[in-house]
Length: 426
Ligand code: UD1
Picture 1 (tube, rainbow, N blue to C red):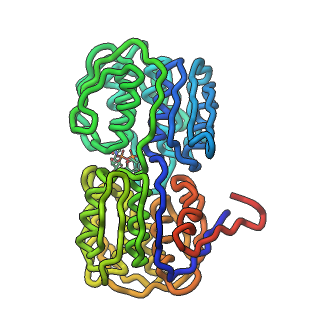
Picture 2: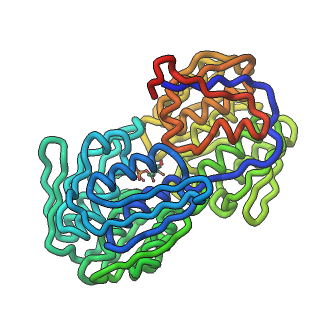
Picture 3: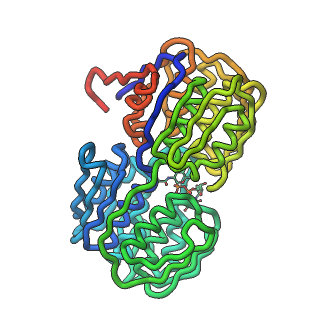
């Protein structure tokens, strides 16, 4: 298993570029299931979750060509024939977002067999809302041997009010509804930019959708969708991680090729912490404004403070003067980075969904273990200001969602390198 070796102490200086959003790319790749024609997606990030999704689609009979570098991170997907509409456990266990193929598969083929998901170990993460929604649209769903099987001749439009706001649940049912008979109205939908990005692709494919990005989405089902070309949004979580990297190291970092509109809650919070921020059309510059000050956060659905930035923010809070309260509202078990931060010298206590961070504490290097995607990023950020050389184990979690992370950080002055396993295992 690869490790990172990080030597702290350098302020990050220069320009760092943001890649396409993994969490947009995954549903957009799944949307290609809805048509026999070719779907071309640009700005696809080169991360392991995308490779997993490629495997998933090809295992069902799709043709997927991923081109990086000169090919500008473009993927061509053609689901002319879906000979095996099954999402196998071996693939799904590594990526919970595999459940995103459930809606499009049943809408296109009338049958879907999808293994119950694995993915990041951040709480129970059920998919009951996906299942209830598809049932409301007329699907029959059974469960056996760890698989869900959904069948329907043709899905019917439905009025669904989500009990709880779910990002991939909204996306899954949105895709299903595009080919359903009649109108669907979904309420209490996720308003995340990734939902809007997916809807833009679906509309380009011929879907009739209104209201994506608001709490209520209306879909007029059509009998067929066609091919399209679409550019994936910049990754707001990667951009946010770099903003914190600039702030925590007291650097001067220009985070380029991002969408500042999607970073509102984080930018507001960084300004409260005393960080200087300049917002451009497609870039955000972050600079030290002197000592960092403590500020509280509560994670919420978009446009609130993202749960996917909570761990990285907590690394920053250890370096802020005063007490920061961090409330995690979205997932029940998302403080796994805390023990590792404490081992590096942070002063953090947890009570239920609330973490209290008392700063500023000097951080020391240590051998630490990555436990999930964003927790890994948090530990790298802490290591960038720790005294000495920190070794991070299990960086495969980070490789699921950050493109060329260590190379990008090295380009702006971080001392970070990857150390392969002596046996070459990943
Ligand atoms: C997506 C993101 C993930 C992010 C999360 C919240 C992708 C691929 N992943 O995950 O990075 O952290 O949104 O912004 O886009 N829930 C249920 N039943 C369901 C579905 C969800 O109870 O059927 C609950 C979850 O347990 C959680 C909450 O709803 O407490 C939100 O989860 P959800 O928005 O579905 O997260 P994901 O879509 O899995």
